[in-house]
Length: 65
Image (tube, rainbow, N blue to C red; front, side, top):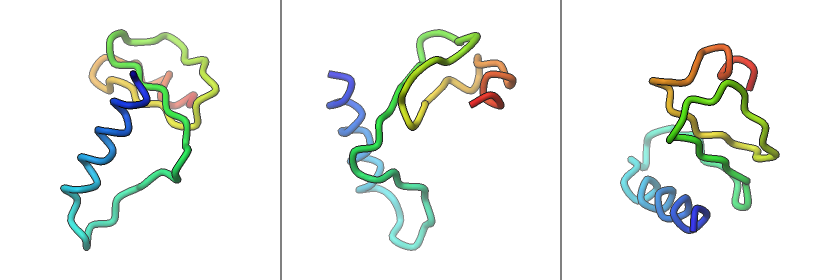
């Protein structure tokens, strides 16, 4: 379910991106971990990309990643 949602969001963003804009685009098959419901004190995941809520997540957690 999460993978399907992630792919749907990525596809939606890709269709609305400007052709001339330089956006980071992960390679196909890149693993994601999306943590938006809580502000983690630590992140322990094998995922290559982590999506965090930057309003509530402590800067030290982001720096550690």
